Image (cartoon, rainbow, N blue to C red; front, side, top):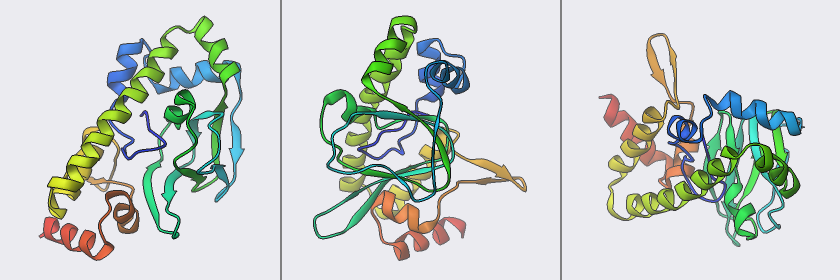
Length: 212
């Protein structure tokens, strides 16, 4: 799934099957194989920063394994989780190609294998893999849609509707796993609170309401 580094998707979500079909890649593993022809993944340890808010965007990234959290922090120390990435995919491309500074920070939630992609690597890949450029265009175009969705959701939807929309996005993008014949979405209530922008008690109340 293609994720963004400076806005919520989560996600950072939709797109993969649609995008891969458009670009000619059969699946995300084929894209990973192409990237690994040019550069091997780097190991980021748990809690290690991948990039910091406010720094220059010299790279973007492909998550091969592990999990990352992208978040922004205000001057008074308040933190908002933008998205949590647990599946293979590109992230943090928008700031890189726009030349802006990072609007967010990113850390590894667990030991993670990540391919760090710089401008020279992009130029090398595009010369041989013309579909790669479409991947990036698709990613950044989706950023705009996600931002508009986030504005609409926070401005016009009730707490119950905001949670429902987020859960629908997870399911619709296959961002879940099956265990004991039940559909599981790999987020804690604390993570949902930070991503959606609602208090944890509100998240708990809405989920209990859904359950009943």
